Length: 121
Image (cartoon, rainbow, N blue to C red; front, side):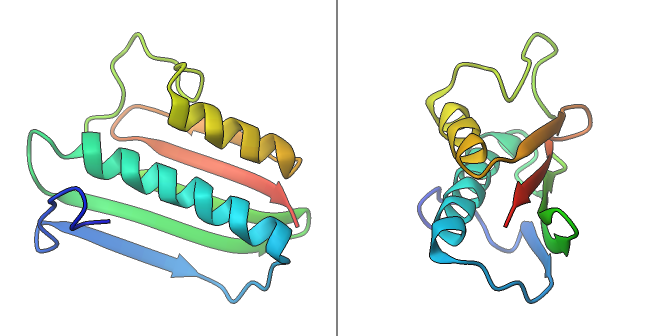
C-alpha cells in the first residue's frame, strides 16, 4: 500500500502490535477490509503536509470478541467532519462491515485520526 500511494516508508512508521488471534474466515475478511480502508485513508490524507508520521494498529482478543485500535498522528479531520459518518464511500463500507460483525466503532478526530473498533468474534 505504501507503494500504491507513493509514500516514503522511511518517513512513515507503521507500528503493529497484535496478539495471536485466530478468526473464522467470515470475521477475518471483513477485519482485513476495515484495516485496509483505514490504512488507505491515512496514507492518502494524514501526512500530506508533513510527509512523515506514525500509523499504529493494535489487535487484541477481549471478552466480547476482538478490539482493533487504529490511529495516525496526522492533523485529524476538519472540525466540521463527523467521522465515521462523513458520507464517504470508504467509511460507509467500514460502517457496513462493522454492522455485519455486530460491532461498534468509536472515533476520536483531534490530534490525528483514531478509531477504536470492538467486534464480536
